[in-house]
Image (cartoon, rainbow, N blue to C red; front, side):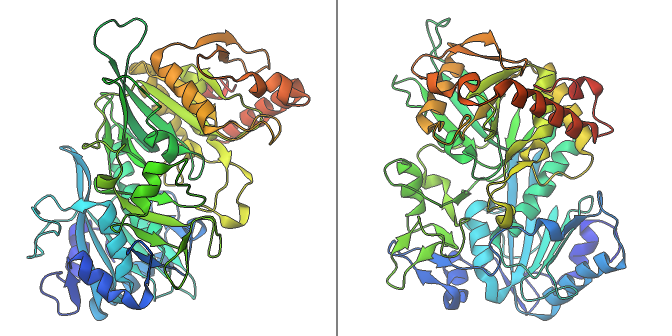
Length: 519
């Protein structure tokens, strides 16, 4: 195919409203009907499906900006487009974003047999802007910004192949039936467009907190927060948590759960306006009541969750995978705000599960940029199931970066410096030994105190050269002190800093000030 842009791609694909082989913007009921042969109906009367692929195929994904593209890679698009022209397919038009300058129309084709993928996507993304109903326009004349063709029943060279043309806004997915490939095909390009506009796309949750501070006597202060972390590290939990605020005029609400974009003026634009794609592993009705209620609502779509023949759902089972998912609607999550854009960001939290890290540490801009580049966490079943639990470093905790990673770190430092954003790293795993677990209540107490400006900071004595809390009101962190909980902590921290510095040296275009700011 040529590289003439998305308009040329639209010409190569069947017209959604005119081609006989296309079912265009069917109702959710119709999509569920088309997928009935794959459905198990849950005890909540919601549909549940099991996919052949249960995580993203990152090792089979290439994009034309960062990877060498040859004839074989171009052939992936030809095969996908031919399939869309010749086979029965579903086509839906949705959108990512709600900001006037960052709203993009997304056209998605998928084999009709896999209408469930389109159903799930429609739970996450709002209708295309021209639509006034639950479905996009019926005439098919919407001009898409991004196009994805997913053909789970077609392989390339006997394997899965995901290929991306970022500048053209086009993605082809062959061989995989995983919903996450469809979702991220559009969010990857959303982040790329934000970066092209001078901002930075982030794999992050965004949150607005209205809270009373000691230095404010009248109205509560409004604080914008971002949480960067890999899947299954607590990003969704913390973004959606109400912080146990008790004052009537205080609140903490989630704006975005997964992907957003930081603009040069401090605004954080959201991407998914209708729903969330959440992990269900270990979902507990008592500890995560609001999330549990949304996941068990009849409007949800479950994927790779253990559902018995009689409809009984077991969120503790890993029968299919520990990466069970649910597409849930924001309407049924009380912590979700009506809007998805954050007016201004004030605080950024990097989520790690490194046992050598304290529950929280404060980072100056250069060290924050180093934390962004390090992206320290653990591998999860959402990324590479075969390595789940292993230590991992992913720049920006964002596996979907297109373009130079070093330039992303430089831009992050520039943005947080110019916007005067406070940055922190928080450990949601354990300190030293697994018995010293950082509980959700511990982290919530830290976040609440940081938002109120109540934390007293002291210079760290473990060698990490960044401030740690001397005291945190309403949070007892005495058992989570690195110097006491980590055997040989001084040597371990020295080794960790050396490892971090060596890792950052691999990014030739990363500023030296950031490389020298490891903590």
